[in-house]
Length: 434
Picture 1 (cartoon, rainbow, N blue to C red):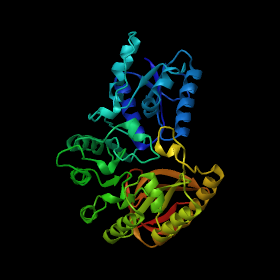
Picture 2: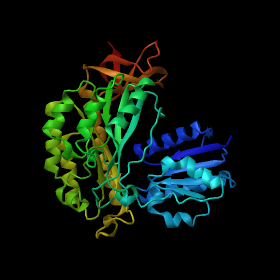
Picture 3: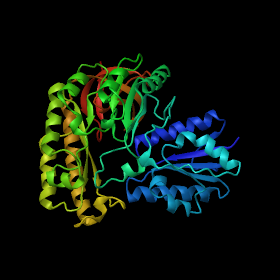
Picture 4: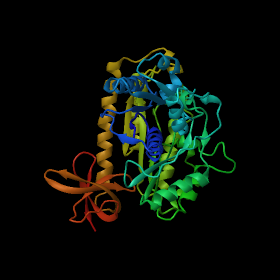
């Protein structure tokens, strides 16, 4: 029995695909081992979103070959699409598998073992096929991430992903529901619908969109919670908010990508909304849901970002007061328009701006959690944790607030009702069982 070690780099979509490949290998009789162990085959599902991600991908591939020089080292995914020529010259890499060919992993491995090195990289920019990958279990035992969409048509000026993932391709509603039904039977109560550009779901399907998909998932027995991955603010219409607000299973946690609170910066980024439109989306969600959790991403130090433009972002974030802000320093990515823009920002300035927003994030996050004090809520318990010598059981509310309770019973994968009491450490809320 051959031993296979897999390593995932990058987003939840990559993680989903890695789990799908692992399950394919297990069903075919391969033994899955840790990436730190000696294996016969190493598979790295790579990421190329930044130059740093490229470097990490190369490092993991070289680490695999160093652990066992006789092993077959496979590079898969986005970095393969973006740097095929470079990887073909890399002596640490034996086999390349691009996006939309991960589903063919077993046949590609068999061909290689038979002495035939199959070309497992397609022209990703001209495919309309959604890659059929499914999972029956996930690394998380209470929450399942389900990939429903691939590709992106947005072409933000800083992003290489449309070139690595291709155009928008959506999974059929029936296929999504079949997988989620199977996951519900396996005991999963919460699903998170994910994609490379989730808001674009259904653009290539007749009569379907993200809202109709969510409505279909809402009908599946056993699923008690539905979450969404990252969304574009323009998807938030009155109909979208009203329909989701009528669903008991839907979790009022919205991750709306912002990137900048300054219209001039958004324009250079080729983001297709204004700060005002973003604010309107937030207001609409707050009118529909009772204290929804709104989270976002912000890039600091984008080419040409002046102190005045950065200040606009700070003022905007103070104004809309989000639950969490994920802060990223702009990373120059070869092959994108932003990489050749004038007025690249020094690293020390990016770091200073990042620290300002991280402090603001801590302030806003603590304030949002404290606003919940006295509120009765439901928590899906996921794990046990020792803090200050005491054992707590920890999970997330519908708003995705990480919350701890005390109980002598094992509550894992149970949804319990509790009253929020306040902060317990950084970004952790204490609650008392009702």
